[in-house]
Image 1 (tube, rainbow, N blue to C red):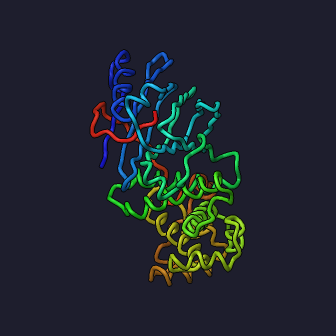
Image 2: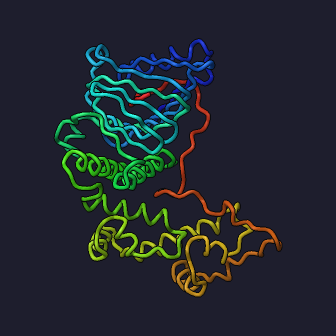
Length: 352
């Protein structure tokens, strides 16, 4: 399921009304913009099993859900909003939270709140029905809005992994494994929420540990020093425990590192944008310190020699390594919204 809405092709005087009217049908919000251009915002909605996801981008604005819409437009969900870029302030009954890029806010839609964005922003919003949240994340009530992210070394890996999973779901062109991805998202939210409410640390369950380990590996593939010991330390387990965690994925941690590197090399060899790089250059970019080792494992994996992929060397004095490393993330890329049409289709979640 998919829908989009945008104010960008609407007359300036009508932008705020379009956006507020759209939000009123979803969750019951008022919206104000203090920009000279009025509210410039786009929202892309997709379904993920029982969850509804929204990718929202806009200029500076404020949205509010006060006591009246809470009564008149009830919404029995928990929202998890991940601020990808920009800044925000989150006012609630217990005070005010400062939110920065990379932070995740978990809050109850039955309670009043005000969310202000003083700069251009982009957020990924998860609308989790309360029953699903209680069964899959946290059975207890949220005592207050919770912030996770950039200020906490313990939270950051799980939040980064969550952003990568969500961005990958928005970016894919063909239907993916909705049930598996939904379980992953709920597992990461559960890992963060139970840690904050009940103690422990994010990633204490096996599924979350596996995802966090893969996320750490994905971000460090270019480092030739990456090893199983480093991954285990990052996740907070012993190497033996890490091996047990990876067993559910059908391979060892070291094999996963090797397969991930080979996949990245193979993808970049097929990328026309990397045609000026030699095979040795690309192998080096993805952490293969030994060219002889790379040649052997590449032949075993793809049934062809590195010589069959040979490319001419760049002209002397030209360095093409800058920008050679493609964007990372669990899905090998970062979603960037394209221009949207001013058409309101089927409504989904909303948080801005």
